[in-house]
Length: 282
Image (cartoon, rainbow, N blue to C red; front, side, top):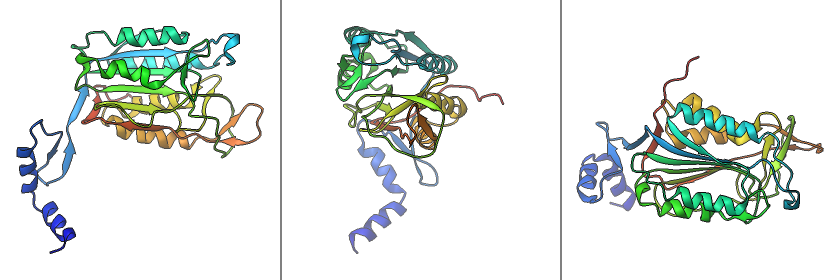
C-alpha cells in the first residue's frame, strides 16, 4: 500500500480523531463531529477591551497632509465596539513617542476580566512603520510586543487592525470618487499564538481614504462586522472584507488612473474567534 492510500485510509477511519484527542496533552483546539468533520473550537468575545488610535492632524514638518475623513474611522470603529460589548479607550493625534508610551502603558492593564484585546490604528506611515503626527514612525513589532508579553492576555485573542499603506505601488482598475492615500508598512509574520494582524493593504501597496466616509478598509471592515458578526467567525468575515475592498473602484484626486486595494491578514489564532452580538435588524 502506498503512502497516499494509507493517508486515505486514515482519513476514512474516524477513530484517528479519538487517538489524536488522547495524544494531545495541551487540550485539543479542534473536535470531530458525529460525521467525522473537524471543526474549530470557538473563543467567544463577550467582553473585550478596545483601543482606538486615529491620527488626523499632522505637523507641517512631518511631511504629511492632514487625513481628511479620519473622523469617520473613529465613528465606525466606536459604533461596532459598542454593539460588540467592547469597552473602548480612544486617544488621537499622537506623536510617535506618545503612541509608543500609550501602547506600553495599556499593555500593563490587568485584562483578567476581558475575553480579548482589540486595537484599531488609523494613521499615515512609511516603510519603517506607523507614523505619529510628527512624522516619526513606530515599527509594528514595537506595537505588538508589549501585548504578546502581557500575562493577563495569555491564551486570549489579541486583534490588531491597521489602516495604512504597505508602500507606494498602486493597482489600477475602474473609476471611483475622490480619495487620498495613507502610507505604511505591513507585518507578514505574527510573533506568537492567538494574534491576528489585519492590514488595509498588502506589503508594497497603497491604501485609500474617502474624504467624507473615511478609509475604504475601516468602512468595509465595520460594515461586514455589523452584518455578519452574529453568526460568523472573525477570519471568515475578514475574507469577505478582502473581497469587498478589492471590488471597489477607486479614483485618486488629481490622477486620471483608476486604482484598486486588497487588504490582508495574518493569524496565529488557535480557535475561531466570534463576537457576542445580536442579529442586525433589517
